[in-house]
Amino acid sequence: MNTFSATIERSDKLRAAVTEHPHRYRILTGERPTGPLHLGHYFGTISERMRLHSLGVDTFVILADYQVITDRDAIGKVRENVYSAVLDYLAAGLDPSRATVFTHSSVPALNQLLLPFLSLVTEAELHRNPTVKAEHAASGRALSGLLLTYPVHQAADILFCKGNLVPVGKDNLPHVELTRVISRRFNERYGDVFPEPQALLTSAPEVPGLDGRKMSKSYGNAIALSMTADETTALIRRAPTDSQRLITFDPVNRPGVSALLTTAALCTSRDERALADDIGDAGAGTLKKFTTDAVNEFLAPHRRRRSDFARDPDYVRSVLRDGNRRANEVATHTLDEVHAAMGTAY
Image (cartoon, rainbow, N blue to C red; front, side, top):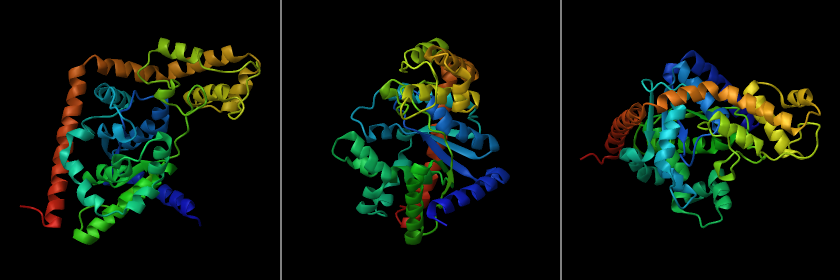
C-alpha cells in the first residue's frame, strides 16, 4: 500500500472515531485574513469545520493576522478582514460558547513557543516544505525568515492548545507531519507535554474563480460571502465566457464557462455536465442567470444570518475578545508546562 493510500485509510478510521467520540478531539483551524472570505473558503474549508464543530469537537479558530505578511509587504485592511471573518463564521453556524475564535497577535504565549520549536527542526526540513517552496516561487522575492519558518508557526498554532485533530487537504499534509515531528522531538527531549496531532483528510472541492483561475480576491474573480445579491449578479454578469452558444463542461478549453458550471453545481448539489446538458444551446446569458440564481439562493440564509450579526457590532467584538481571553489562558498554561519541562520556570 502506498503512503497516500495508507493516509486515506487512517483518515477514514479517524473520521469514524471522531463521529463516535467527538469530545475526545480538539481542532485548530483558521484563516489568514488577507481579504473577505469567499465561496471557495465556504466549500473548501468552512463547511467541513462547521460539520466537526456541530458534532461537538472542541474548536479553536485562529485568525492569523501576523501571517498576513508571510508572503506580502503590507498587512492591508487586516482589522476589517478579521471582523468580517468572525461574521462569516458566526453566520456559518459557529457557536462561540463552544468555540474559541482568536487573533494570532493577541496571544503572546503562543508565539513564545516558536523559540524552542525552532531548535527542533533543521534548515533543510524547512526548505523541503512544499508550501514554503511554492509561495516563495510565486512571490518572486527573496525568501524571508517569516516564510521560511511558516511551518513552525503553524505547529505552534496547533500545539499551543494541544490540538489533536487537524482537518486538511492533501497539500497541507506536510504541515501536520512536521507538527507531529516537533511534538515528538520536544517530548523526547524534555518530557511529555504535547500530543501528536492527527490529520483528518478532507475532500474539499476545488472552487474556481469566475474566470477559471483559482478563486482569489486579488484576481477579482471571487464571490465574497459578504457580497449582496445585487453585487453577486453584477460580478457574474461580467464573468468571461466565449462565443459558443452550446454550453459544455470543458475546463481546459472553456475555463470561463466551466467555472460558472462548477459554481452552479456546488450551489445546487448537481453535476456540471448534467447542468450543461440542461442549458444546452441557450447560451452564456442563460448560464449566467442560472448561476446567479443558484449562488444567491444558496447564500441567502448565510447572508441573512450575517446581516443579523452585523447589526450588533458590540456582540461581534465581544466574541473576539472572549476568544482572545480564552486563547491566552490556554496558551499561558501550555507555556508554563513548557517552562517546567525545560527547567526554565523561575
